[in-house]
Image (cartoon, rainbow, N blue to C red; front, side, top):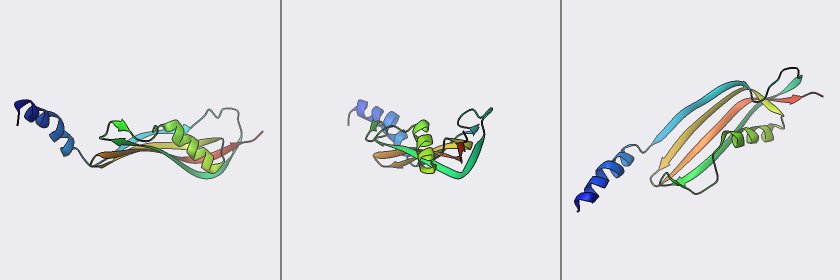
Length: 115
């Protein structure tokens, strides 16, 4: 083996192999997904939405993006709501050898504005 290959292996490949697994990252908490001042609303119940992306070697995207707005839209679509209150967001990563998946989840109580 060449010296350059050994150096590459020690600096890049070995740390990647050691860090394989799963990671969970808290995202945040917000009172609502949109301003509520002066608006009346009805609570519809709990809503959850997710968005995810799959990567090859942790770098090359295989599927679409993984964004919080898309996860929020999924939560609102599943509940037929206009907004969420008591919102929490979290993300986690799953690693499967050469493929990884990053997931963002939005939880909250769906509301519908009254006209």
